[in-house]
Length: 102
Image (cartoon, rainbow, N blue to C red; front, side, top):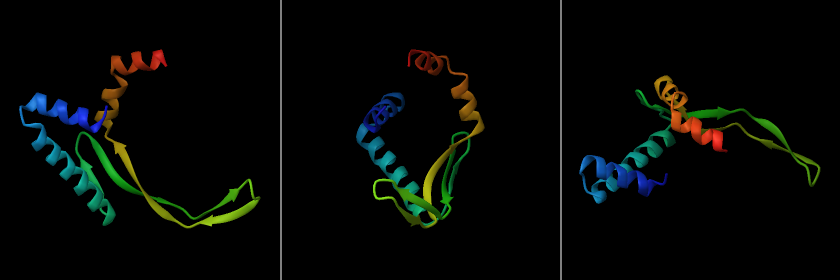
């Protein structure tokens, strides 16, 4: 599902114009990005958490050149779903049917 499809579905279910939904969704993403850039995590009860995960310093190898390079510690954005969200996905018959097709 694309962002445009999400916006269309929210608009259809709520009766709010697509333009207004687009502005709201874009504002939500901007708040998430800006907050995480500042080092803050975002917790949405019943949905999940947007957190910054720390990756430790490590030595990587360039196989083609047979050299080592050091990757310093860094942070990456991550999403951790809530327990109720995970339980809902595990119990979904449509997800199980889609997994059986693959």
